[in-house]
Amino acid sequence: MSMLSANPPKPNSGSLQWIWLKTKAFPWLNCEKFNVLLKITKLIFMRSGTNFSLTESEALATTVTVSKARLEVALSDGRTVGAPLAWYPRLKEGKPSERRKYRLIGGGIGIHWPDLDEDISVEGLLGGRRSGESTQSLAAWRKKRAR
Image 1 (cartoon, rainbow, N blue to C red):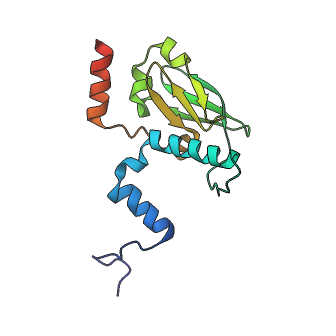
Image 2 (cartoon, rainbow, N blue to C red):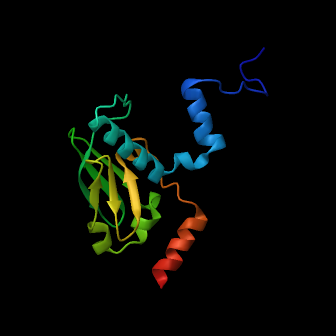
Image 3 (cartoon, rainbow, N blue to C red):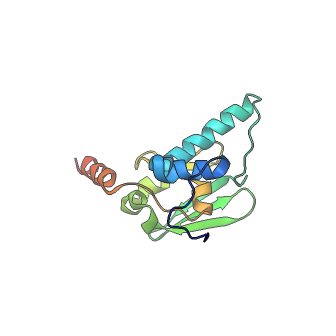
């Protein structure tokens, strides 16, 4: 039997099941805001003494710079990670004053821009993930902003 079978086996345990759930059953689990909330939840449990195994990077955002074309984030481990602003339409369409107004969330696991209602996780930046926002959601945000 070929490994490239037309009927691949269904996921049955562990990470395969999680990947299947994230991509097929519940695609919203891949969205950036969910990932930020998940990390915050992990931090809360860790602080309460509950054991959690974090496999993600332990690097935290320390400072954020948004230019006309790029998002640059300095990390606690000395690295700087960046991405084209085109990956994050809300940031791209935001005014410079809105882009400068951010706060680090979860101790630096993510960045929140309150005036733009945008959240980006360090993990997402390190993984090279673009905004997962749907066209409909972005259109509704634009309409609300235009008022």
